Image 1 (cartoon, rainbow, N blue to C red):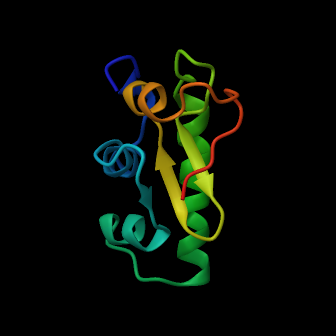
Image 2 (cartoon, rainbow, N blue to C red):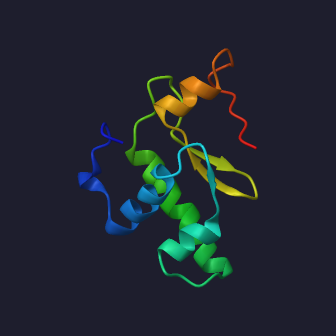
Length: 101
């Protein structure tokens, strides 16, 4: 995360990003992210996570392999892909294809 300029981030965005960065390559559920924000689960609050993730994605650069660092995993949550995880797990794969199980 050392190449990400966090000066333009809100405190809430930093809390979400921190939670994701601490678990590279692991799926972090919306419920977990809501817990980090001390939010109760509701349809409206779950949407807040989606909006925050969208804002964060716009503020962080793609990694050196040209892949978005934040990936959505449909129905499960989000995953942060760091440089080491990418090079260790996806060697030989097309850069644009990422499957996280």
